[in-house]
Image (cartoon, rainbow, N blue to C red; front, side, top):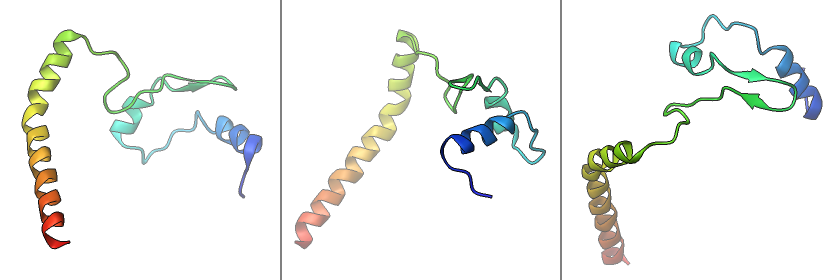
Length: 87
């Protein structure tokens, strides 16, 4: 059966406590606190979480990303030059 609109939300809300035995440990971990109260969702969390990073976390993140961002800039610039030469 296909549900639309409010019917879909009502059906999904009724299924929220069903345990999926095939769910991955990652899925179980990040949805362990998930709740739907009829109007809003609580306990949503993704790969990186939803906490704000502090100054130290930001600095570490920038340092660790520097190499990859540099590589991306070089790749992007290389693609621009290749495109320019073939037009």
